[in-house]
Amino acid sequence: MYNLIRRKVFVSYHHGGDQAYYDEFSRMFSDRYELIYDHSLERKVGSEDPEYVMRRIREKYLTGASVTVVLCGRETPWRKYVDWEICASLNQQMGIVGVKLPTITPGTNGSVIVPDRLHHNIESGYAIWTEWNQVYNDPAFLLLKIEEAYEKSVRLIDNSHPTMQKNGSYPY
Image (cartoon, rainbow, N blue to C red):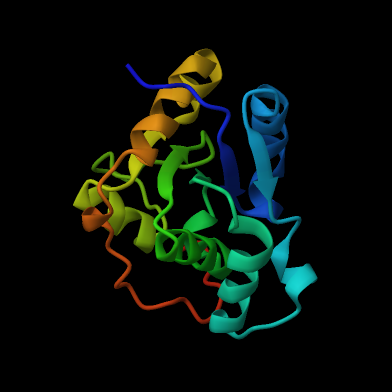
């Protein structure tokens, strides 16, 4: 059984599309975790240089955090700041938990599109993938997933994907 500690958790999400889910996540878990979020880094950092932004993310937001939760909605895969936050988290060997939000529409084969860097780490076995309904209906479930992510071997990290240089757009 996991030793349930009040972890410091960074939350990455697309502000323009998934703010309501972040607000609900925060309401549900702020008493269980020390939640850190970026308050829209794009406006705060004011830079388009990925290296500079990732350094600022590490210095200002990730220091002391042990796990990053990525709330994955419909447009999340095309947001450069989400990519940069995942990259910076992996550089610090933090655990990663991806949460599929209900706004994701599965493709014809049932697959879903998530940020590439997150996908590579789900495939490598490093990142944990779960669904919003599991987290929402059973908050203790997320506690276990965060501990599971925290205890993953850093040898599984795959941070080789090229850093996004600009935001993309939803493909249809």
